[in-house]
Length: 492
Ligand code: FES
Image (cartoon, helix red, strand yellow):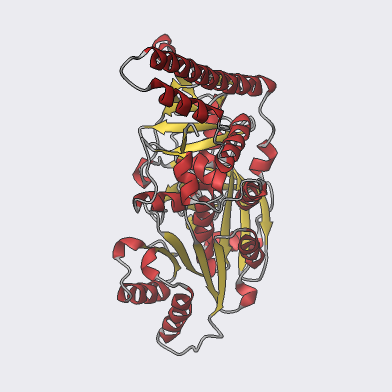
């Protein structure tokens, strides 16, 4: 067949995680050329691909949408007719180029036959007969490769592929989303601030492909910037596959400190010990953060601010979720006793380095205790958006089932996602004893579920005792320090 494709597109077509594909490339099982791979190599590596069954793709997307929030389904409209038209034209041009190439080959063969006929010193008759026989053979069609190309063509009509330089990160733009929305949704830490065409922070440069402006902006691009193909990602969508140069955060040090007056959208009390707080930022002042970080919150009166882990995904930067435990802090008292929808919560942040190691292709294990589920939830949703982890295990330790206030959410992830495994652990059922022995017992339960702990990155969120116990157990089993990240919920 004829072409190379990006890793993301290839993973999508054969229905595997991009991380799984990258692992096989690293192991030398699949060759790549400038970050792309050949369809034949892809099919050789995944011979059992169910190409007839596009439900896999739809299924994965549906689950992903459900998992990372409703915002996407609201935006998931079809591309505009102009965009579809441009994509059809691009595909038609590619088809025309391939036809032309075929005609050239046919012409070449005709010329070859003619030359052979004229040659004196070789047995041209035999060669001509051979060539005729070959040409009479029906063209070798590889059905699997043809179907893969057909599926790819359909995908290209509905989505545009974006590659970012210099990082090489890539993502798809679906529907009429802006490049910024689609990039954030894919879990990328693109540079931006207002999302609204005012600040100019999301400026990028178009290297190739076609984009279209989908909203006007107040930020004024200079003539030099326009001549250099610069544009705002929050105000433009991709018409065709594009390559852009854009700035991305490489770590927590690249995320600015922000102060935002948010409004309470909803408060829920799933049990006596925890409240689920949903805050909404103003449209033009959203919180930029990395999954797993925390922010400082305080009510409208001069209460003392309290650090709380953000329990939602950075891809939905207007809707921030927190899980507030009932304790003696002023924030907790305020949330449990006074707070109501519409009230203001002052937020400052983000902070903390309990963030995903995106350079690692290891599977992921999250071990959390009580409200340690908050940063774990943010990280899991982010890992789902990135779509890189081959396997994700969540161990949620609470005294009993009653205390797992979002048990249903975890079970729905487990039901819907092939690579997600939820392991609730009741510490009251473990052979508890005094002086931390309980934690070691819990670690035995955890390690029984993981065949090869050394193949995982571990993210542990909880109190000092559980963190200490996990560290000791994992290091003893050969897990290296670099595979272990911890979040002490007191944010000490
Ligand atoms: S994010 Fe401010 S202009 Fe795009």
